[in-house]
Length: 365
Ligand code: NAD
Ligand code: ZN
Image (cartoon, rainbow, N blue to C red; front, side, top):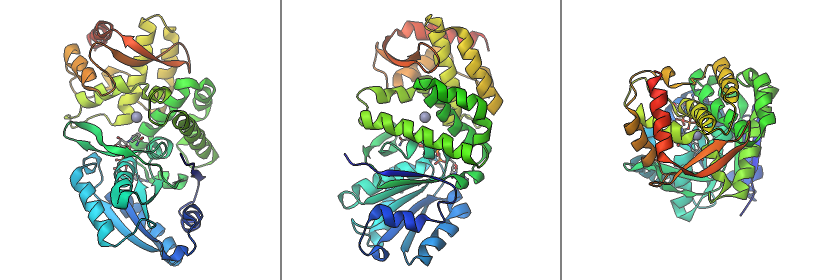
């Protein structure tokens, strides 16, 4: 196992050259070549300034721009990235930088892990979700026709550089979706962080010390869980809070033009996980109301009624849950809770109980 720095703060692109030099600790840094993998949106907004800084420092850069969107987590885009890195004759000691959201991070990280049996790799996440979640923890990969993230590797970066200013150009909806995952960390096992977000959450949306603090705390939390359980044999599964119901809703609405994005589905999923916990008499329903109120104040969806378009019936939703890789037939694993920030892994949740819960929820629409 190796450890690495996570650097978080404003205007880090300005200092990128310095940070990279530090992390790659090469004798003659100027000879290192960097492949910058980024997507069309991030390239048009932020690639220019980053390249300018690096070029000024006499660092040779090879920009590799992929189409923005989840469909780029594919074998064909992976092939393109690999070919471009090899065509530019980058060696093992050179470096691949992922400059973008989780899509770019997962794809570029996987490419870096297999090119020449593993090149230097650096994460420069540009979405809130990527800064607090996907860039930390070393999971990389692409999708297959059989499901999301089914081809990949565990590959840790040399360092993570999260520039909080870059988030200013992120669409509000993407920002809120990332914020939902931040709230998740509080709900898992840090009630004080949830309470802090109730008071300060709105300020995360503007650039300043609160934003930096919130991102730092989130990364620390994720890094700690990953350090204790890198390969998800135990407590790392807590990070799936809200994700079984969330994935169910994401898949159910995938073909709708007004579909939910991941963080929105997870926000509703976390509410459902709390409501389900209440139904099992694990928590007081008032707790769910409190979390709902916070999500609403941020502009996140909280209930099935907030989903545009038609949802399938309960039996179909149930089949989507069974498709999810976190469950096996007749033995549903759910992250449930015993109170604010008291989540736990429930290993024997009865499918019948989930089905009747879903029926009851759908009946209220
Ligand atoms: P994304 O990478 O698609 O980015 C969302 C959108 O924001 C894209 O359109 C992108 O072009 C745009 N964008 C990115 N940065 C921007 C900026 N600064 N300004 C303006 N626009 C910007 O999506 P995401 O939400 O960052 O990541 C989702 C992906 O992350 C999924 O594929 C998911 O599977 C993966 N993920 C991985 C892990 C992990 O541990 N590896 C964890 C969670 C999620
Ligand atoms: Zn998630």
